[in-house]
Length: 459
Image (cartoon, rainbow, N blue to C red; front, side, top):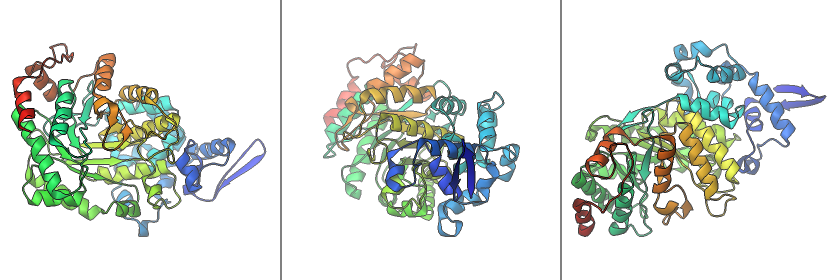
């Protein structure tokens, strides 16, 4: 039981799970699940109690039972006591103060990574302002490598997302070339296939790999099929760079995705065995999003932000190249409007970075949400200031296959210019060599080089 009295009113919270949920800034998904604070006063009271809670409590009270959930077991069994020792005596509020201090620089945060549990990170996020989330997130750089180096200071990468409603090769290649001409695609060229059939995914992998090899692009490709499909493709010697999978923060949520930790380990080992990376061996790509566990009725009475942070424990176990929250994709039932989407994105980036993940974000919304492109413009700017590793590059910011709104190739260029950011170094060198960027780092699209036209003509 957790309790406090504020101005004569007694507020009680039966357990840590309830306290965490009631302390969460308002969002529609928690209201839908029946776990949100009933009043603003109750929310503030919960945040006050949470701020005074010792961090060590999270090691002794599991929000989802250890015996029933393999994600909980992963979190507890992999906790590094020595890394936790420097902050073991702190409360959640004191930990927030330390994170905002000069003592919490990049190296200090890196040393702390394995001593933090997702629940600790989620708790700090709940009592932090947006500015706190940005300031702390910006301190933590997480660098990963495959064919190029992602996450370095002063860099902002992007995923080319050339989805097509019928997986038409010419349509996909046109979108990819459009993105490359606008200096996008260093994080990954990643296709969401309209069909998850192994044959179709094989064709798409060959298509993008041929483009990459023909143009000698120092980047990686991925067809975002289910992990079991990708395993079949690996067995067929398909050119698989990265293994993709959507993940959640509970065992039952992951079962709804058709996965468990053992399957992810199998896929991780299979991808490593291919040895396709040239500068590193981070071979996994994970996507997450607040509300996924609730939508699968797998939330165990927890709030959606805490469960999102728990998904990062799953990702962290596999040293991924890329992780991104698809922050507004599930819909207004879970994040109602632009304000809630923005808050969730900053929370996700903050928690992911504290937990040592190379966090990106698909800053997006569905057309029935109370949001518009101005909200996404604002969010993209905030994320870039916070040091996000990468964002999405979608033609016209409109995904014509998944039917939602995201960020465009031009948006990436605008943010890079305003904040003096560059793409990954190997990719930047290639852009300069191809005449698509000048020595000052300014993208200078010209008529496509002959090699680009030849690729498109062969499609």
